[in-house]
Image (cartoon, rainbow, N blue to C red; front, top):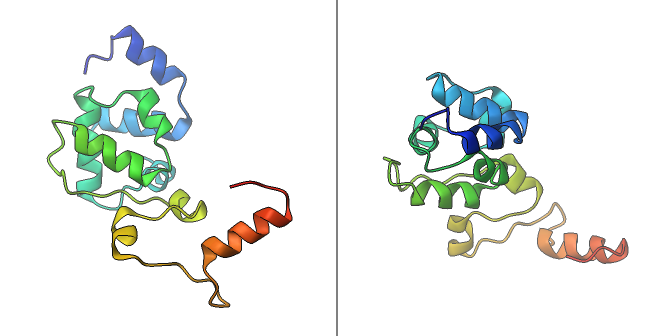
Length: 137
């Protein structure tokens, strides 16, 4: 990727600090900050390389990467579509997925249901609390 590309640089200026850190780290051949590691679900060298090669080759642009921050399924889809990714089987999960109750594709495929402390389905519990507060899901 040519960092002199005007569109690339303009996008880089408009992304969040964690995204900018990840991209900068890739171009410096260094590990990103702890915040970027957590926000992008980089749990292993494979995760890092899946993003690394796609970012370096310009297959994942800053704005798209920023839009996927904290969203494991989006990160997984982006990296699997990248021709330069040597780890097509890698699956991303982030802390944000847990916070927002997003299931991983593997968990959904197995039919697992998360349970709260009282044994009630967390999805049902969240839905009821949202109704109580007038929030639609």
